[in-house]
Length: 364
Image (cartoon, rainbow, N blue to C red; front, side, top):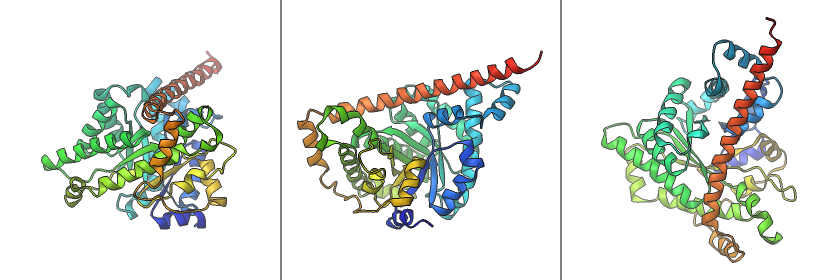
């Protein structure tokens, strides 16, 4: 196994891949990353699938077959997604089994067009989990107000959940509370308390959002500070009496996952967020480019401090610079929802165009 990724694993952090495509699956790269780089999970989102479907002709045969079978729109798109993610789940199933369900997960997102509709999100999450028929599949639900209502219900239903598009300590705690309520309701109903969940906190988008608003000494510091603050809240929650009671009843912790960890500033190290966010019991989901960079020249520094370290002092500096982190967190979440919705529409448009091209080329 690669020495650099092994050091993070030895620290207690899991590395998941934030990428999916037919080429990655069929070309053997994902299997190789699992075997050689210690990848123990995989995440996806609408933007990843948009780019994968647009890139070349890897999905064209499946699109033609599904179109001929009468599928269109979201039904066709979800079939493509399920084809990929069930194959990825099968590749990761040995990891899932060996870790007793701690690792080995893949994530499948509900339609981003449902972000503000709890009832439809609940129904979609239950249906997608049943259709995939894979024990190691997490359903991704955004941490919006309506999304968190859905999270509680879906956890109560026993569906594993990845709560996505979280940006702040407050977003994380709201997601954690939804998860805890779902588990508590299961226990009250006499159901098994073990339902897996991760809370995905986005890091790099903080720094990209404020880069033009702050002076250069502040660049690429805000995201890490927000992560440190969130990690402190996570550790405090795990030490709470409430969580300890649930753990004693068989519940497993909702794991903290660092997302958006590819460096967006070419003037800093391409492994900046991987090195800065090393922490036991957490997950870092890396874009393929970032994973390969870290495997090649990454370093593991001092792990994140459980007490939040200097995070509060850094945030005070940013506030003096005029950054309203609470308002920015809400803006980033809304922009994330809108961005995924735009990618979803773009993927649907691409599929329609491919179907139309096929129809035009078919002789009468």
